[in-house]
Length: 131
Image 1 (tube, rainbow, N blue to C red):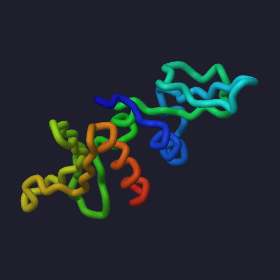
Image 2: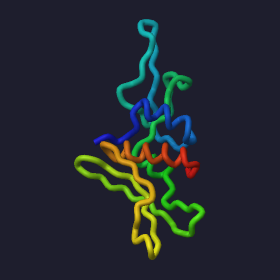
Image 3: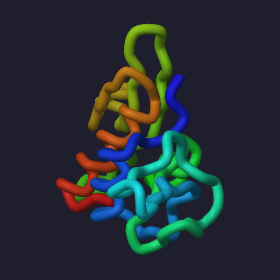
Image 4: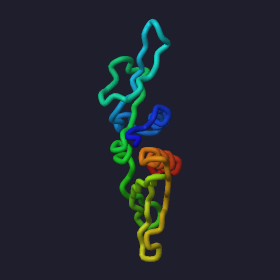
């Protein structure tokens, strides 16, 4: 099970989210013998090797904390965040509650794991200017 954003996802989120919301870092290592590379696993501390080249990384917990637990738009109906892990796919969605809608799904993203589904939801909410 994937527990954090991969390097490409991390680079994209670094353009959208506050860096302080990340709880891990992809560290950049360089030496005279190589052109440099990112570590195989993200670190839980601030980068110490080359902070200018390092990339923030988000754990599942950090991703969930940046997603609003409820969404409100021009309608009075609230939309609540739900996460649904499954063996084949995982889902991140907002369910709209009102007498007439009876829990209609408002926004839905899916991924191979919850990290991927939450990552896609961050992108979707950013695109809709709801983040």
